[in-house]
Image (cartoon, rainbow, N blue to C red; front, top):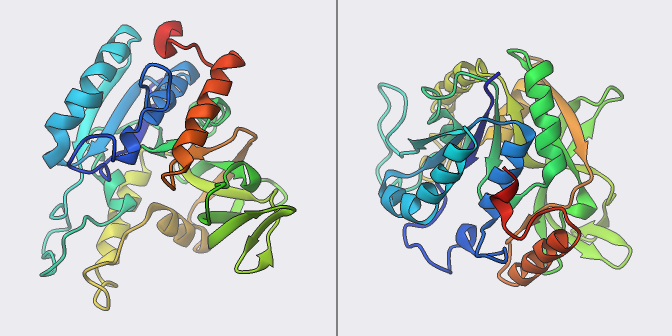
Amino acid sequence: METTLLIMAAGIGSRFGGGIKQLAPVGPNGEIIMDYSIHDAIKAGFNKIVFIIRKDIEADFREVIGNRIEKICENANVKVEYVFQSIDNIPNGISVPEGRTKPWGTGQAVLAAKDVVKEPFAVINADDYYGKEAFVKIHKFLTSEVKSTDFCMAGFVLKNTLSENGGVTRGVCKVNENGYLTDVVETSDIVKTENGAQTNGQDIDINSLVSMNMWGLSPEFMCTLEKGFDEFFKTISQNPLKAEYLLPIYIGQLLREDKVSVKVLETQDKWFGVTYQEDKEFVIESFKKLIDEGVYNSDLFIDL
C-alpha cells in the first residue's frame, strides 16, 4: 500500500545558508532536521516523499537537499516528488489582493499536492523533529484505520515540546474518553518554569497533549480542503493582506461541524525545533545523545 509523507518546506528562505533555520546542521555529518524525519518515515513504511516548496527556491533546494535525498530514496525504493506553493494558485474568479506578498498558509500548501497525492498521507513541518514513534503510529493508522473522513494526529506531551529559551505557541488538545480530538486551543507564550509551565502567568498542565502539525489524512481530504479554500476567500475582506488558510484551523472547523473525526495518537518522544537561535545547540546535543544511545547511526541512512 502506498503512503506519502508530505513535507511543508515552502517557508524556507530564498537565500540558502547557515541563517536559514530549516537548513541548520544538527547531525554529526551535517544532517538537518528534515533528514531525520525522512529517515524515520521510510523506516516506518512510507514509500513516497513529496516536498512542498516555492518555485523560486527549487534549484537551490534540489542542490542542497533534493538531489541527495533522491539518491537515498532511490536506493530505498521510495519515490520523490516536488510541488509548488504559489500566491496566485487560488480559485478561479479570485484575484490576489493588491499588496499581498505572502502565500496563503499551510492549508494552501497541502493543496499544492492535490494532483500527486492519491493515497493516505502524513503532513509535517520541514523544521520540526518528531521522533520515530509518531511516524510508526501514523503509518499504522494510514494503512489500517484511515477513512475518507477519519483522520489522525500525533499528540505530543507538552513538557516534551517546550523551549529552554523562551515562550512557545502550542495547539493544546482537548480529547474525549475514546481518544478522539474535540478541539485544539491555540495557546501562546507557554514558558517552562521550575515546577512546570505557565502561559500569561497561569499554570498549564505540562502533561497536556499538544498538536505539532503532524497529521494523518485521507486522499479524499484534498477535495474537502479545496472546497474550504473557496469558502476562505469569502471571509478575507477585513484582512486581505495577512489572512491565512491554516490546516489546523480548518480541521478544527470540520470537527466542530461534526464532519470528520481525528484520533489522537499519543507519543512520548521529545519534539525538537529551532524556535530561537539559542535552541540550535540544544538540538545538536539532543541528536548527539540519541546517537550515543543507539537510536540513530552516526551515518544516518546506512540502515535503509
